[in-house]
Image (cartoon, rainbow, N blue to C red):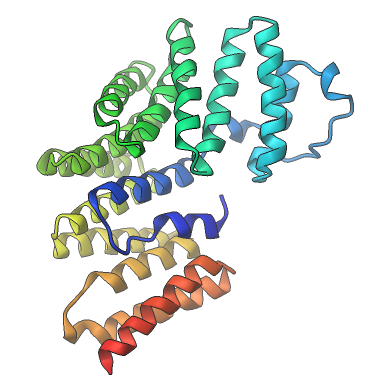
Length: 310
């Protein structure tokens, strides 16, 4: 996932109960990655044979390589070829796996309804198969997409099922991702106390396992939830924790993201100088990482702060 894509989706200016889902869930997805895709090494994507001579699995693998490189048109071409092969051979597991991958691309491009339709079929197929892990992953995906579409009841049902399945197969990563999404859904639905408890539980569980990525994600989501609810001090604490993690891991894009959040957080006049310093640091990081979206946001924030300073 490119740094610019991350910045475009993870700005929290004008945070609302609806945008807290889109923003934080996109961050969650960026950090978690597509677990199955990581099994494929980077190699030339051009097949040695014509596509019509390749199997569904070979086409799926080539599509995945393009997907990792964010070559979405090429990836979708191969995924659709793979889907046709799997349907022709009546390979239900292959159909379901390919539909999930197609849905992921549609979600990243903002085509949520198309993603939802693909995931509905995938979930139905996985429910009839014996692969509980794949079934849980598909439920997690449709839970996230349904939440962004405003289908709260469907999302809650899918996430609850996913959490139970991840527990059964002892997949701590999947369980943690699911709990973060469930917590955000609860916040968006007005279940403030329950949602904060769920997010705190996810952050503590990731900390216990020393899984830095998931700890960072859950902590940022917790901070966003507190900010949304007007708990400025609690939001600052969560963001400072996330910033410390980003600095410890030398992850500049996420460090810059947290600098911007902290710079936007305080509205008091006497904090303006500190907020300018945070904005400048975020600007330097954006320029260093060539993240034009983050740089634009940093310049915009600094302009606002300088106007307030007179």
